[in-house]
Amino acid sequence: MIEQEFKNIVEEIKQQINSTRYEIFKNANMNLLKLYYNIGKIINENSSWGNKFIDGLAIELKITFPNIKGFSVRNLKSMKKYYIECSKNEKVQMSSAQIPWSHNMLILDKIQDDIKRIWYMQQTATNGWSYDVLAFQIKSKLYERQVLGDKPNNFNESLSSPQSELARDMMKDPYILNLTGLKQNCIETELEQAMVEKIKTVLLELGNGFSFVGNQYKLEVGNKEYFIESLNLNMLAR
Image (cartoon, rainbow, N blue to C red; front, side, top):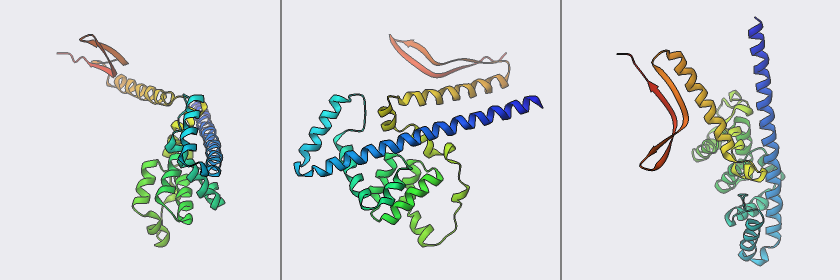
């Protein structure tokens, strides 16, 4: 009884940690979009310079922030588009703040109607759609089938935000990670370690004859080094 109570307490703490982590990245995402909106505004106000302004800006930002992604010529042009489209409709800007940059640009590039844009942004945030799922929903014309067709859906039965694919996309967003000084391999390492622990558990349950040697196991072949993700041994008795 005491052991189960302890597990319940630990589980509650884990959930609070995950929720807090998601909120941190969600706030970082909102601040990133605010930054991109402001940069887009400045670029638009200096459109009279032509492409020279964006080209020069990209070079200057690369020199000043060499380790930060997101300030390429292409992305700077996307910031200008983001500002122009959001400045036309405040609801678009408010809805866009709930989803990652890549999701926003996908919606703005593929959809021209503001009502549809807002709908896809809100559904992405509510249902935790990953980038690929969002792309599929747009391609399959989900808005036309669900809204215009007045068909029922199970959106409200989706996973909560901290558990969704959208949350994972946001936590691995290279623009957020680079801007904050974090690295994507921090998230990848955490995922790999969790997988390794699962493998260890399975091998222990299999009993005698199985052994977990290690992960990222180094082998040298022909003066070259190779790293095996996971090395397991099956030593069956004869």
